[in-house]
Image 1 (cartoon, rainbow over the protein chains, first blue to last red):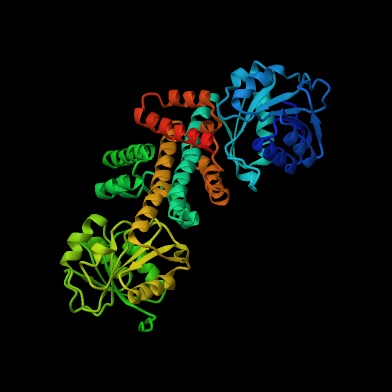
Image 2 (tube, rainbow over the protein chains, first blue to last red):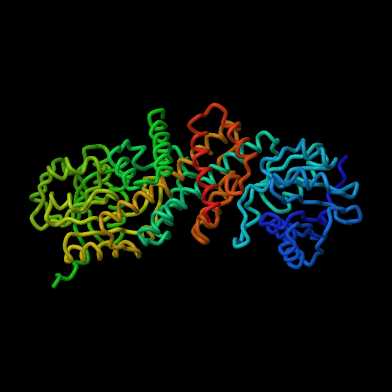
Amino acid sequence: MAEPLKKNFLFTVIGSGNVAWHLSQALVQSGHSFHEVYSRNEKSGKELSHQFSGNFHTSLDFSQSPAELFILAVPDLAIPIIASSLILPSTALLLSVSGSFPLKILLGFSKRAAVFYPLQTFSKESVLEYSNIPFLIEAGDPETEDVVYRLAKSISETVYQIDSTTRKKIHLAAVFASNFTNYMLSVSHDLLKKEQVDFDILKPLVFETLKKAFIIGPSKSQTGPAIRGDHETWQNHLQLLDKKEDLKNIYNLISHQINISMKNS
Amino acid sequence: MAEPLKKNFLFTVIGSGNVAWHLSQALVQSGHSFHEVYSRNEKSGKELSHQFSGNFHTSLDFSQSPAELFILAVPDLAIPIIASSLILPSTALLLSVSGSFPLKILLGFSKRAAVFYPLQTFSKESVLEYSNIPFLIEAGDPETEDVVYRLAKSISETVYQIDSTTRKKIHLAAVFASNFTNYMLSVSHDLLKKEQVDFDILKPLVFETLKKAFIIGPSKSQTGPAIRGDHETWQNHLQLLDKKEDLKNIYNLISHQINISMKNS
């Protein structure tokens, strides 16, 4: 039998970036208690500890820490080196917030480990509605999974139990849906800037495009020269991109894919 | 001196697609009167005329029409052939709704012609707030421009006087911001579908990404493996895309551009 979940956890955050900052806030707002933060960046680590009235911990030796949850909020590349240096209390639960890092490797660093991946983009400037964020969780045993599930549920309405392979693929989908859409916006932004046109002119168009994609599906809602097979506009646009060879390649490649998708549908 | 603008116009729509439908609705809601529609598609043309209690006109001879505005809401490729066959009343004002079609060529078809381009994506399923839509207008003479400006203002709060060259570039920016972002979503959608994961899981992420891009600017808000220089995740993602060579090309090309932009900033 699983122990009943203690309602409030005392937690430690390792890392002091945007994810660390927002998850600390989400957990505190859900009734959990911030205990301490470790960060190689002293400035942002101290800011975080002040923000939540906790301690700034200067080593990775947490053997004397009363915290029960240790949240590893560092870039994927830093996980192995930091996790292998961590000294945790014996009953501690180590949580990774990564979309790609496999649970199996994490379990090599701590017997009690789980994935606690918020499918969201974080920046200090943004005010987020934490209850909307989908949490993708995974643990090595049912008891830990139950604890992590209920922890995630204490923050958010949408919690999914997802294995590492599927999580990786969802992360890939998120790269297209978030990072690459954002890149397309940055191209637009730069094109408009050259014409001294404010980027906000595109706001109603962009939000309507996305709203539609989630209502009728992005394939059905595709519009524009490529899906219409309007090669004249296509060629005109390539001319406007002039000597920007990379942008022309991107324009051609995506337009070609959109055009093919029409023929296959 | 320009004549004072008549508050309500009697208008004719040429074309019966999504743009024709929404602009008719926007004009009617703003107090103008739908008179008739011409469409090569009899079914949708008749539907449109019934919707707004007007006539379905079967020829391009409008010499006897009492309408004052003729809205050319057909694909760019069809503009020359349709516009050259149009017979309009002598005082009629011909409006093009195209982002790319030059005013200069339009003026070859009608002495009184103007561009009336709504920077928005239209589909019958969507309910739109017309007052938010930016209208990009252009006319060959100040008097016509004044009429079209006030017509656009009767629908929307945001109206810009933009020349054909700049409008073309804004249209190109819109292709990146709308058509290409939508394509990125369709790739995500397909990746998730294979894992039997609902596309809605990405909704909070996507909307937050865009919100941020319009608040702090898309370059500053760029996140993901490419901007972090996380080549391990980058390579993992290429492996997950397996034999989808086109998607791998797109992934590489965009990630490369994002990565460069970091180094240049």
